[in-house]
Image (cartoon, rainbow, N blue to C red; front, side):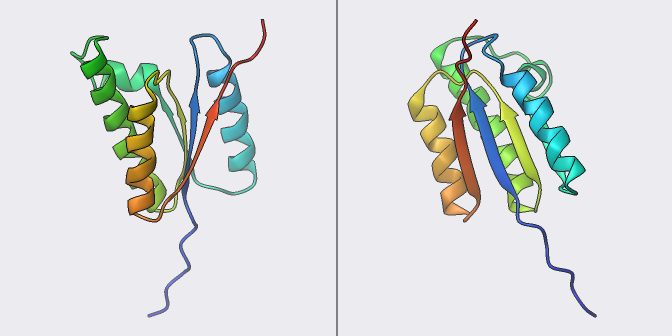
Length: 119
């Protein structure tokens, strides 16, 4: 039995204020990566909040829980060869740092980009 080399995955984490351009950038980036033949998943913070994190509010604790859930899903996908584009507000640096450390612990690439497009 021969094994095919698995594509290397990574998480590209887009964060920033509402209406900063995260969704637009994520869609264009995902489309381009797919055109190049990559397996790509887009994790939209708004969609995740409606389904995976339904019932959470916007307290600091709930926001941290939401970010950690998204981070776990992204890391699992990326660890398994998927390029995962995440777009989420994620206002707290310590929450994002915990996601980064989860990726580091599994040897999974993580790139965080703060999106702040001018109006």
